[in-house]
Image (cartoon, rainbow, N blue to C red):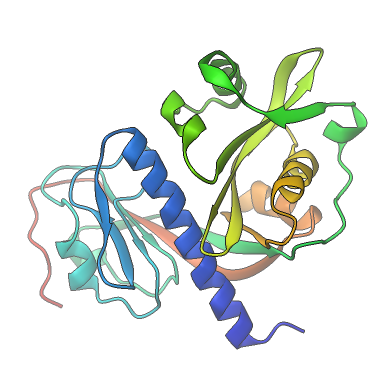
Length: 240
């Protein structure tokens, strides 16, 4: 049985892992982010599309501290509220979506999947050409410099040499984070991650049907998170 204390520690690790991954993406786009003490990762300039301007790393963060660390003068600022305990509505933010952090212990049996039954061959993406094929299959766009980032692996499942499934695995916070999974690929991504980091637990976050798929793959939801979006700009930071 996992206690609340252990679950809280896992959520913190998942949040740190996510911030490390977001930081790698930002650096690849030449955006500089920083840690504000132990409780917040933030960028004072706009981060790449689909990536947050801030991630809370400890519960109980003050809304005023989060808002002051990011750019609210231009539209599109977003905050990953890792513990679903912020209230940013007074600062012009809206809840974009809610999700669950997920956890899978190291060494857990790999799930079966239709993708694996189809005989996909899994390997790490290597080179800009392969990354372009991965992006075409996934719908994501990533600078090729990320292929050389420490602790970041793009994984691809191939059928007849063509990429049809995949995901990203990245280390940080003492765990492996899995994201950008596509093509019913949980079993293949988890298997490839286990080969590289067999002693590390696996974390991530999902919602909706993707959360259901993750649970079928052996993950357990461990805590809620929210993503806040500020659609307009030219606001003033709250003094709350």
